[in-house]
Length: 92
Image (cartoon, rainbow, N blue to C red):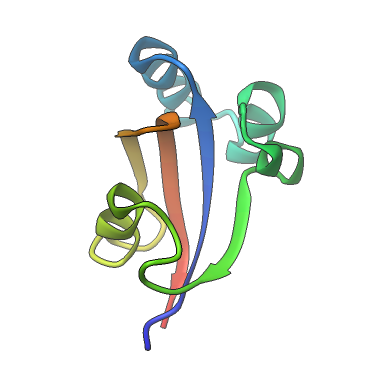
Protein backbone atom coordinates (compact mmCIF):
# COMPACT_ATOMS: atom_id res chain seq x y z
CA UNK A 1 0.00 0.00 0.00
CA UNK A 2 1.22 3.48 -0.81
CA UNK A 3 2.50 5.63 2.03
CA UNK A 4 3.23 9.34 2.07
CA UNK A 5 4.51 12.06 4.34
CA UNK A 6 3.24 15.58 4.05
CA UNK A 7 2.98 18.91 5.81
CA UNK A 8 0.21 21.47 5.73
CA UNK A 9 -0.98 24.83 6.95
CA UNK A 10 -4.65 25.19 7.90
CA UNK A 11 -6.35 28.60 7.86
CA UNK A 12 -9.95 29.82 7.81
CA UNK A 13 -10.10 31.72 4.51
CA UNK A 14 -9.00 31.27 0.93
CA UNK A 15 -7.57 34.80 0.92
CA UNK A 16 -5.38 34.06 3.94
CA UNK A 17 -4.26 30.81 2.34
CA UNK A 18 -3.25 32.60 -0.87
CA UNK A 19 -1.38 35.28 1.10
CA UNK A 20 0.61 32.63 3.00
CA UNK A 21 1.35 30.78 -0.24
CA UNK A 22 2.80 34.01 -1.65
CA UNK A 23 4.97 34.43 1.48
CA UNK A 24 6.39 30.94 1.01
CA UNK A 25 6.93 31.43 -2.72
CA UNK A 26 8.80 34.65 -1.88
CA UNK A 27 11.24 32.88 0.44
CA UNK A 28 9.59 32.36 3.84
CA UNK A 29 10.07 28.83 5.16
CA UNK A 30 7.08 26.52 5.23
CA UNK A 31 7.88 25.65 8.84
CA UNK A 32 7.91 29.23 10.12
CA UNK A 33 4.69 30.12 8.28
CA UNK A 34 3.01 26.99 9.67
CA UNK A 35 4.15 27.73 13.22
CA UNK A 36 2.90 31.31 13.06
CA UNK A 37 -0.39 30.76 11.22
CA UNK A 38 -1.73 27.20 11.14
CA UNK A 39 -4.94 26.48 13.05
CA UNK A 40 -4.00 22.78 13.21
CA UNK A 41 -2.00 21.40 16.17
CA UNK A 42 0.55 20.18 13.59
CA UNK A 43 1.51 23.84 13.09
CA UNK A 44 3.71 23.60 16.18
CA UNK A 45 5.71 20.96 14.30
CA UNK A 46 6.05 23.09 11.19
CA UNK A 47 2.92 21.52 9.72
CA UNK A 48 4.35 17.98 9.68
CA UNK A 49 1.60 15.35 9.44
CA UNK A 50 3.92 12.34 9.58
CA UNK A 51 3.39 9.21 7.50
CA UNK A 52 -0.04 7.99 6.42
CA UNK A 53 -1.76 5.86 3.81
CA UNK A 54 -4.72 6.38 1.48
CA UNK A 55 -7.99 6.93 3.32
CA UNK A 56 -6.43 8.18 6.54
CA UNK A 57 -6.95 11.82 5.61
CA UNK A 58 -9.96 13.57 4.09
CA UNK A 59 -10.55 12.84 0.37
CA UNK A 60 -9.34 16.29 -0.75
CA UNK A 61 -5.98 15.54 0.93
CA UNK A 62 -5.70 12.07 -0.56
CA UNK A 63 -6.27 13.42 -4.06
CA UNK A 64 -3.29 15.79 -3.77
CA UNK A 65 -1.02 13.61 -1.66
CA UNK A 66 -1.31 10.45 -3.73
CA UNK A 67 -1.41 12.02 -7.21
CA UNK A 68 0.53 15.29 -6.98
CA UNK A 69 4.26 15.72 -7.32
CA UNK A 70 6.54 15.50 -4.29
CA UNK A 71 8.03 18.81 -3.14
CA UNK A 72 5.40 21.04 -4.79
CA UNK A 73 3.34 23.56 -2.79
CA UNK A 74 -0.37 22.94 -3.42
CA UNK A 75 -3.29 25.06 -2.36
CA UNK A 76 -5.58 26.43 -1.43
CA UNK A 77 -7.16 23.02 -0.92
CA UNK A 78 -10.59 23.34 0.68
CA UNK A 79 -11.87 20.75 3.16
CA UNK A 80 -14.54 20.81 5.85
CA UNK A 81 -11.82 22.10 8.22
CA UNK A 82 -10.88 25.18 6.18
CA UNK A 83 -8.23 25.97 3.57
CA UNK A 84 -4.89 24.22 3.38
CA UNK A 85 -1.49 24.69 1.86
CA UNK A 86 -0.10 21.24 1.34
CA UNK A 87 3.30 19.84 0.43
CA UNK A 88 4.01 16.16 -0.13
CA UNK A 89 7.45 15.52 1.37
CA UNK A 90 7.76 11.86 0.33
CA UNK A 91 5.76 8.99 -1.16
CA UNK A 92 6.48 5.29 -1.60
